[in-house]
Length: 417
Image (cartoon, rainbow, N blue to C red; front, side, top):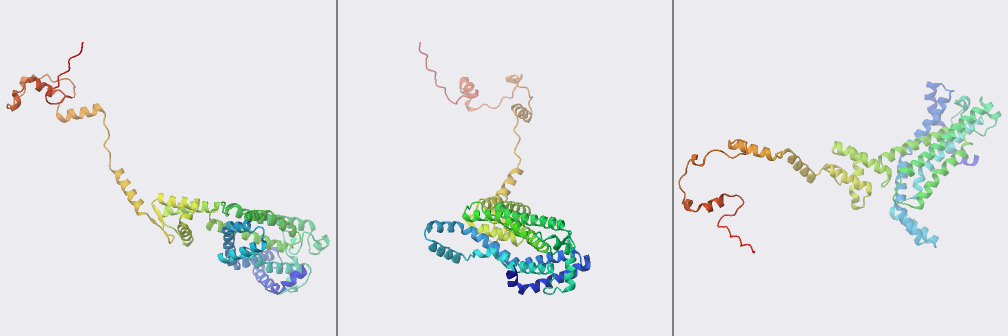
């Protein structure tokens, strides 16, 4: 470990300087010799480093998604050249070059913060050994040795002997209980971070060896942290636990707001986006417009969740545009206006037979009784004689009967005996 620490000794002075600057701020609030002052200084160091590493984190996300997209092509190359390892490697490198993908990009955040990790480990190890390092002089060294986090000295380890722990004004039980709890929390946070990545933000339609590899790492990494954690000082455990919590929160934010296409996180995001767009009638913010723009650009290559999102907008009378905006659909708006106008026109209520007869009788000024009028025929005023009055009465009677045709009736054929 001394050889590894010496390789990163060039960054020891900057790391110790940053810790001292934060300690001067927190020492004025909590006291210079308290564990809060030194512990929060380490936490602030982590936050500062992770903020500086955000661009690398974005590259890591893009690289991981690019690798997931290339998995089907990589599988074809492996099957095609399974007996020729050299040709397989050449085709893989050619594929990476054509798509602009770098497999090492997914490891950039871990590789970038490794120097800070080893530098902090070397600083805390020097404090435990009562050696000055960087800008930490004898006065600050004595103050750091007095600092305890929940009863455990900042530079104590799980594997330290009781004599060494007593020299730091603490008990072996306190050190092992605190370090054990922090190791468990560190391992659990690492497991949960990897698990939410595998269960929520992975394209479920693609089944490749890469997926199995990531699933295996979900269980391997926590075990590695637990094994090596017993050799880390309490200050380094604080550093690594803070890093895991930051990574977990950062990943939750990315999964919620920029999920991987085809994943369960995308289904949940598009459902929330559909409700928001339907409520406000437009996309809000650059992020929403970027998501809608990417979905529209895919055309027929949209996945199940994206097609459901577009169809949901169409049902609401909205149409997604190529620039990511959402406007009112003209055809749907016209259909909705026509439907609204149709509902305004009230259809006449259908009446029963008795109601129709009653209404007809009232309109004619006649009694509603269905009995024949008792008025004699000759009491009716006689009108002028018509030309057809000379026709026989039989024809008139036949014409008066309803349901019969006009004109002479065809004689019935005689029945056969």
